Each structure stands twice: as C-alpha cells, then as structure tokens.
Amino acid sequence: MLLRSVLPIKTRLASIYGDRAFLLRVAAIGLPIMLQNLFVNTTSMVATMMVGTLGERSMSAVGISGQFSGLFFAGYYGFLSGGVLFFAQFFGAKDEDGIRRAYGLALSCMLVVSVVFAGAAIFAPAMVLGIYTDKQEIINTGAEYLRIIGFSFPLQVIVATIAGLLRSTKRVIVLLVSGVITQLVNLALNWLLIYGHWGFPQMGLRGAALSAVISVAVNVVILYSIAVCQRDTLILRIKAHYRWNAALVRMFFLKSAPIIANEVFYGGGMLMVNMVLGRQEEASIAALTVFRTVERFIFSFYSGLTGASGVIVGSHIGAGELGEGYRAARRLAFLSPTLIFIVCLIILPFRDPLLRLFSLTGTAHAYGMFMILLYMVAGTVRTTTYLINETFRSSGETIFGTALEVGSLFLITLPAIWFAGVYLKLPFIAVFSLLFIEDFVRIFIMFRYLYSGRWVKPVTEQGQTALFQFREDMRKRRTRKA
Image (cartoon, rainbow, N blue to C red; front, side, top):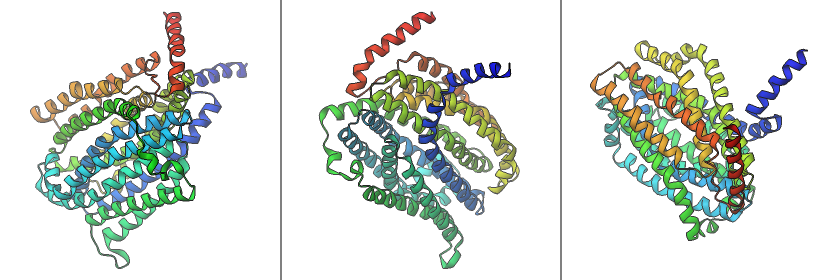
C-alpha cells in the first residue's frame, strides 16, 4: 500500500524535475560550475571581511567601485551571451570551425568594451565614483582602489570568453581547477598586501585591488597553460578565430544586439537605481556591499543550473533535438527556485553571525538582517527569471527577454525607486524592498512564454530543419489543451 502511494509521487516529481539520467547530466555540468563559483564567492566573502576590518568607509568604497564593475560586466555580457549561444549550438552540431570563429568575434568585441571601461577607471576614477555617490570621503577612498582594478578589465574578458567556451563544450572541470588556484592566490595576496605580513608593504585597500589584478592575470596564465597541455585547438588556433564571413557576422550581431541592448539599458537603469541607493546614509551603503557579497554566494548555486541550462538546451537545439531541449528547459525552470529557496533557508539562521564577521554593527547590521530575510523569497523569484532568460538566449530567442527585462525595470522598478527615495525620502529599507517588485510581475509572463515553446529559434542547419515539425507538435499540443 505504501509503495503504491509513493510511486505516483515519484512519477510526478520525475515529470517536473526530470528522471535520474537527466539530473545526473545537470549535475555533471552544473556541479563543477557551482563548486567553482561557490569557492570564488566564499573567498570573496573572506576578502570582503578583510576589507571590513579597515572600516565601513573602505567597505562602502569597494561597494561603490563594484557597481562600476557591474556596469562593465553589463557592457560586455551581451557579446559573451551571443558567443555562448553560438558555442553551444555549434557544439551540438559538431561544427568546430564555427565555434572558433564565434569565439574570435565575441572576444574581439569584448576587448574593445574592456579598453573603454579600463580607461575610465584608470584615468578618471573620482569622476566615475561621483556618479554613484555624493559622499566625498567614499569617493576619495574608492578612487585609488578603482584605478588599480581598472587594469584587470581586459584580463577579465579573456577569462570570461574562455570560460564561456569551456562550459559550452562541457569541459567545466578545467574552470573548477583554475578557479580554485586563482582564488587561493587572491586570498593569500589579500592577507599579505592588506595587512603587510611577511615583510610585504601594508597597502590597505590598494593591496586588495592589486591582489585582484594579479589573481586575474594568474587565471589567464593557468587557462592558457591548460589549453597548451591539452592541445586545445578551439582556443589556440588564433588565426582561425578571425576567419569570419558575412553570414556569421550578420547572424552574430543579429542575435547579440538584443542582448547587448538588454545589458546596456538594464545597466543604465541600474546605474540610476544605484545613484539613489548611493545617496542614502553611509551605514546603508556598507550593508548593501555586504548583502551583494552574500547574494553572489547564493548565486553560486544558481550559476551551476544556468551553465547546465545553456549547454544542455543549446546543444539539443543545435543538434536538431528541439523537443528534448524544450523539455530540459521546463525541468530546469522548476529546479532553480527549489534549489535557491533551500539554500536561502539554510543561510537564514546564520545571518546574524555572518554579518558580524563583516564587522557590521548597529544600523548597518540591522539593515543586513532584513535584506537577507527579504532575499529568501525575492532572490528565489529573481534567479528563476534570470535562468529562464538565459535558457531563451541559448536557444536563439534574444528579443523577448530583453523587452521584458528592460521594460519592467524602466516602467516598474525605476519609477518606484526614484519616487520613494528622491521625492518621498523613505527609509533605506523601504527603498531597497522596491528593487524586487518587477521580478514578481516578470516571472508569470516568462513561464507562460516558456510553455509556449516559441522561444526555440536555432542558428544551425540541423536545428532549422527540425523547426517546422517542432512548431507543428507544439500547435497540436495547444489545441489538445484547449
């Protein structure tokens, strides 16, 4: 009797989350990515704790500088997402030459963006930080930090492009190895250069910035060294990266343009949001810096599912297995909120000691406690919308998510934040809470579009050949349900 009652539950769970074979495939790709990001963000938390010992002003300076780094990420991420779309689908179609050409195209565009942002950070850091906050003490402290960090920007895009290629071709263990080594180097250098141990100069916040630059350079060396040892022709055949043709360039920018627009407009919108948050009291800026660190830690778990989604869904669609890609996308859309909610639930009881480790006290500590509690629900919803949008992109649909994400930011969140923070001058906690209202609107629309299957838009010949039959199958399915 008990067995008969359990079996239907097991069958229902398998239909929602996938069978054992599917979950093992997700784990094989997602677990190394998750572990890498978990290790990276754990060491980042420790580094932030070290900075916290320098005082709340240093913590705030790092947080404000991080907002410009986030804008830099938004500037190049559209090209990276476009590249990953082609990497995954060409990998499914077994087109290595296509992967090389897409790699070279994506990297070239991203390097251009990195040079522009590096120039702004190195030559005008005070002006950059003045956009985000009106507190001169934080600007003066952060300017030295940002000027040094700017030198890492071109190196960051090299690492990001190689990482996108390796994930799309299911070689995630390499990223785990390089990530662990790099972060150990970063952690050691932070300890040596911030505090001046073992005869090293005591550089304080400048030491934290220099550690970050050196560790990214080490990561580049490790990734290229592994590529040489493995004779990785996808990365090392540099001449093949630039054998572009008009069809590829046109398709790349056609697919990448909406993502680029998404990141540029969304980054611009978040810049305006951060302008409001950066003009709150200093305790709130310090709390926000720590919250972002905890948020990145939670994102480590989400990143594994996103990486698995891009590879599994993208390779299925590139290979012409559109039905399999559709089913995988639906299963991953339910796995994401389940995993993130469990992670938030585990972190929740430890939020008080966690915040004290970052040297937060008084008002800043109280703000941090509320922000983590709110994120238990809001973060679960937000990461799910992000994962579904990344799934759309890997399948070739780059317009719908852009229109929805940018539209909801400018029509819902930004007006609410500005009205609450600038005109009503509500307390920081009330303004911060409004950051997430768009996600609760967006998630229903995204699930509806996910179930429609209209987001399946292959770029490979195999995928396009199978598209008519897939659309016919989806039409019949909708007719049966009606």
